[in-house]
Length: 171
Image 1 (spheres, rainbow, N blue to C red):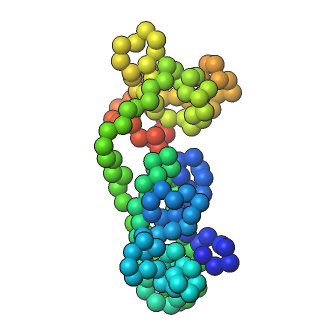
Image 2: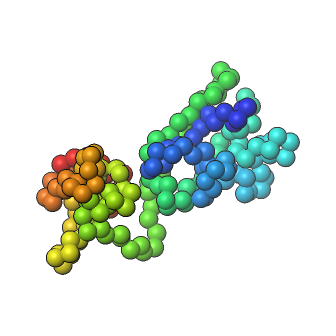
Image 3: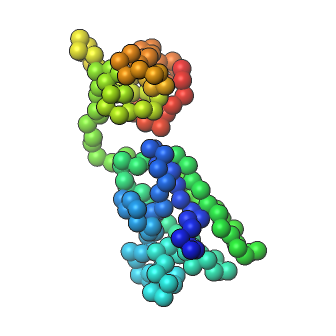
């Protein structure tokens, strides 16, 4: 992070840019080393909150686990700013791990979802007023109306088996 330029950041499910790499620290550039002993390289002298912020010609790495459930899943990763010939970058984006139990929010229709602010086309659980159980449908949020949003009630064989909001492939 030289001269307030983010050379490493990620994009969340809402398309927002984030530069924290551990925890649920929206707007606060930080990696695991900030909370560990020994601290990040040059943390005391330069205020670095990640090892790679030191931008030194030495091997260094950063780790972290993003726990901000409103930002996950990560959609894109961006890296750059290598200044020395011996520098290289590699990253690992681990598997999504789900813990505990969470009630799945179920809407009455794709139109209700769009009215509630969900504007990304994809698979969602809906339960109409007459339905006994919720069903997985594809909502095409690209329509210009909020009252008649196209809803495909018959998922294809390529449809997801669970609820992963990043799934956007059409049937």
